[in-house]
Length: 134
Image (cartoon, rainbow, N blue to C red; front, side, top):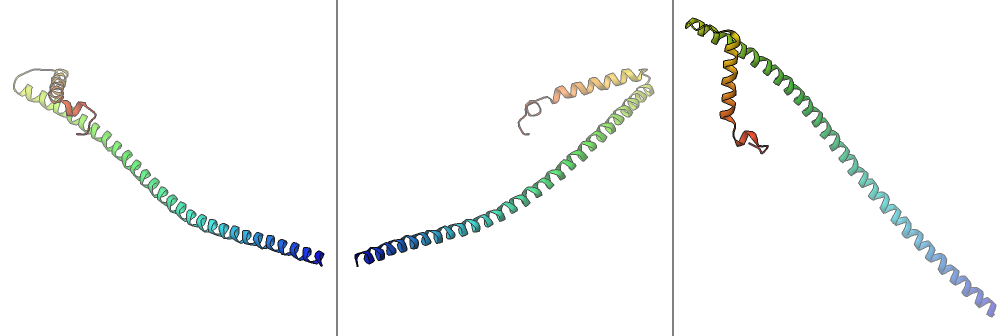
């Protein structure tokens, strides 16, 4: 009888161990399920972030395109301003000749350059010479 009781106790103990192991397995399964759910939510966030990054990159490319267009326009404006300066020099030279002053076109250009230098010096002040925003 004692052997039978020992055997039943041993079976009951093993049954308890198996029951605890099954409970642990179920807890682990629940944790795995929660982790998979969280990973799915995180992937959605990652995808949204990637879409935002792609949109930002498209905006950056658009801005770079505009910068290039602006630089081309600046170059065109510089060429136009140079032509205007040359025409002004010629007109000033012709006006001086009409007044009886004889001056070479080079001397007229030098005179205009001196006027520009003087103007630059007059306009030099803190707001233009420091990197702070205007």
